[in-house]
Length: 159
Image (cartoon, rainbow, N blue to C red; front, side):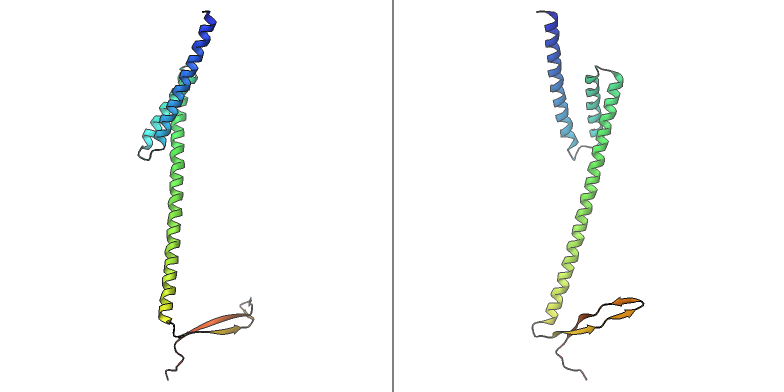
């Protein structure tokens, strides 16, 4: 077998081995980076080691590439943690706002039901229209409108 063919087969085998290692490393890193139980340090170390291995493999064990890959992996880990923290904060705030909104609605409907129970069905609540003309107060022009005055009681006088 000629030497050039042997060298070509060796290069193809190395590429296939590198691709297999890269896929395995990517799978392990993705498993660790998504787990809530994995600490920030473990993620940074795992991604840093993966980056170092990738940098060394791509640059034929150049020490600068290994250090750069490790730093890049650790930086990627920190970026993922930062983005995850921002997403958690945003989700917490959304849930908090939804809870406050629900509490206000619940209080409103409780107030309405209390008023309905107090008014009963015997017609003790009456609404009287009050026509308000256009008026100017402190330079502000109020347009004419009709408001309703709510009167509760059976209409009998107490004197």
